Length: 219
Length: 197
Image (tube, rainbow over all chains, first blue to last red; front, side):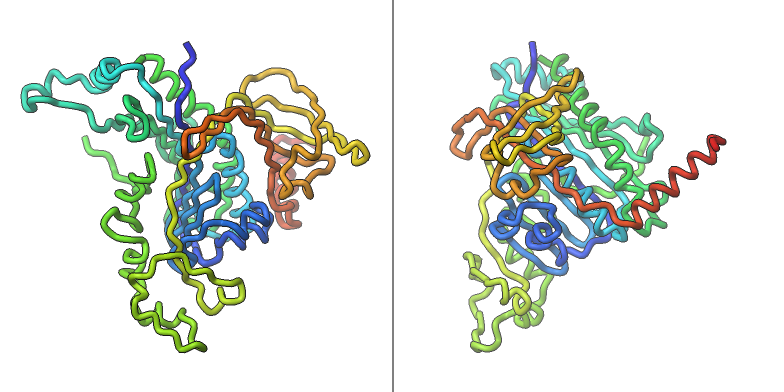
């Protein structure tokens, strides 16, 4: 039985030193990273030296001095997020980038509340908790695989929670996290962007496999 | 056993989580209030329109949309708009990365090679009508151009499900001379390390 998520999203997060005021929707359009009309009609919340945040109809963008975040809940646009990140930091290659997170998140609809509770029991067996709680229930579970098997710095983390968007439902997020070899001496974007470009396809495939494998065992 | 805690960056399950977890947003404060904590009133006041002598004494209460024309952005680079979380979403059933191999302007069509991203298999070829392409991407139609083609379902914020064929062109800056030279240098290093002549 093929298990497909009801809702699927992706978030790309970069940690580094940014200049938010540059990264307005107009800048993105002028650089050809998004369509001209998107730059003009973006729903801009703020453009400021400390933070810039705007929405397109398929993407949310936020950057502060230390964190850059792109998010979409339209699976058809995931590769576009990739291109925006790649394009931005090819242009701004002197931006120090220290860490990268490629985050895949999925909400699955579960057939019944009974099955939903069963999933919670499988992920977090309740026996020992019944000694201290009257009615234990899993709120969130995080598992981590570290060190990475590809030789790069970082880890892979998986979060599992009851879904807040689908009920009864399960939310699973894979955080594929990479770090520069020596964070303290990073002076540009090349190392992290090379990691991003070289690992993008594998990351998506691996994250999808993790989510699918977990769900197959839970349902 | 304790593990070193790396810097945390926020990931959001939904917009409500963004509200709760994001350092810049909280369910109890508007975005404006959050920014006010970081931006002193004196700084904000310098962004106001001075020539009309407007003083926004109720500035902190005014979080409704303020349209700012392009030529005012230099004078008032900070502006606030209320937004709603984007509830639209889509699921892709089939993805291809496509490369245009030929364009026929007379027939308003183009042919592209399709690389299947959903299942590994042989490449295919398809013909597309130029009118299927969004206006904002039409200028990118040329031999060698890359676009993504997704077939799937789109869900509106009211829950309407629609089958979609979503085509969007790839947009990347062109390679600079510096990047080309860097690639050549790396290739030369690899060649030397292999001992090739």
